[in-house]
Image 1 (cartoon, rainbow, N blue to C red):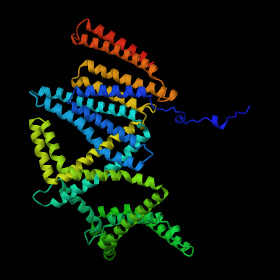
Image 2: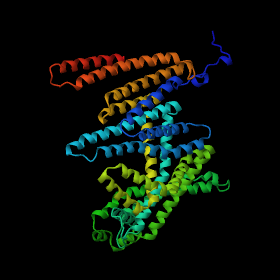
Image 3: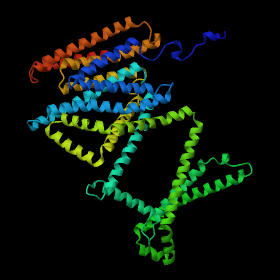
Image 4: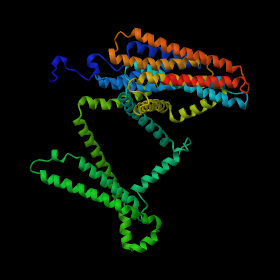
Length: 550
């Protein structure tokens, strides 16, 4: 019998059509957010000032908010521009959270009284830095669960947006720094590092545009001819010949364009074929080559290949053809794309321009307090060296160039973080079903694991480990319930039972580990009773681990 369904009974594979989502339920989301923020905040707060916790939370809020913004369909241009501008805040809050804790511990632990203290204190600083990093990542995962914006697509979209935003302040910073360097070269404040670079660039440009007359320059001339031919061929291929021609000149224009393109491509192939032969002038002296070619032929070849006018014309033609190909490609792309999509594509650059404008407007206000804050956080000799070096850099380059460069570095840090997250999502390190809770659990676990090396007590470390397990379990269970009954379903009772069971198991394990830690702390490894106790504890832990995995 045929399977007949009415229009009202038609089913759909879209889970959102029936109110069922792949996001965790609201109760599980609340558990993930609260437990992660409390655990990560406690671990970070044990190592440094309370401001580090606030900075880590600010980073998580802005990062999760940016991931949410790039997924918006309404007001896409405004959302994209806001996410691009927030890239500066994301990078600044991350650098401040990690850097503030690092500086605070360095100031507290250094200078040392003996050489033997350098290594343990250095390990403690490194462990504390990892704790802040893990706690910050955990908060990002928790708040992304709340916002519902962490997916592989949103991670890649935000990574691309951050990279595009990074291009603008980076370009402006490069122009400012290079202009300062070039303007001061040869003066009393000459930068010794830049002089060889500028000399090398000048030599390369001179070798291609104005070579030494009186001898052949086959290699560079062949490269110029080949590059020009390729650029011309690409430009002709990109031109809309059919659209520009009329019915009367259609065949003639198309034939001319095809002939020019064929000639350019054949010239490029000929240059590529002749290129190995041009190396003869590297191993054969000019006098010997003049003897082989005879004086008239050698003079003609030298005059053609060393002509500055001909080389300049070829380079200008290559630049013109490359510009035409680029413009035509951009126009074709824009005509094939909706206006809103074109606007969204250029919006990240607007965000980068806003970052530059903010840096230019506030460079005189933020630079001095920031440098003073960092100097005050460093111990004696470190503070003196930092103040001397930072003052020299600001005096040489100017506060505007320094602040824009720092802004570019912060936006670049956001691009690096977002690319790392996108790669982690792409390789499947985070499950697609619950990426936010998984990231929160992983960050909390890493922070708790390194907290012991940073000097945090066993109860807080074990509490962080238990919290990481509960966060992952609650997130995964919440996703299952979200698929079955939706986010707003009545799931409080089963989730409360599940949470209580997970907490009970985790608490029992933590108490057992704490008891073993207390016993082991007061024993000696070589004691006769210690080794059997350690073996028994290890066997019991393995059995419990296997049972938990099953």
